[in-house]
Image (spheres, rainbow, N blue to C red):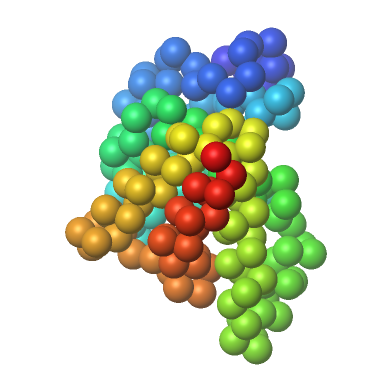
Length: 164
C-alpha cells in the first residue's frame, strides 16, 4: 500500500496486513490525521529499544513492539509521530547544546510533550498503559532508560494520569 492509498484509509488504524509486514521485515504506512508516515520494522537492533521517530519516519524494534497490545502500539506510534513532527534541525540543535552543557530539561520536555501528544491525539488510557509496560520492562532490565533523553517513568506516568 502506498502513502497515497493509505491516506484514504481510516486515521489512526494499523493496517490489517501489518502482521505480514512485520514478518518479512518490511514497513507499513500509518495515517496520522491525514499525514502519512512510514513505519519500518527492525529485527534485532544493536541496542534494545522500542521505537524512535525522526524526519525519515518511525523505526520500531519488532521484538519490543510485540510486547504491546494493539491499542498500546497505536499510542506508541502517536508518541513517535510527535518526534517526527517536532524534530529537525532546531530541536536537534537545542538537544545538542543541552548535551554540551549537560542540561537535560529540554530533552525531557520533548518526551513529556510526546507523551501528552499521544494521550490527547489518541487516548490517555493507551498512553498510560504503554508507560506502565515500559516501567515493567525497565525493572526487568529488558530495556534501559536513557537518562539524558527520558525522564523517570514514574514522572511520565504521573503527568499522563493528570490528563485523564
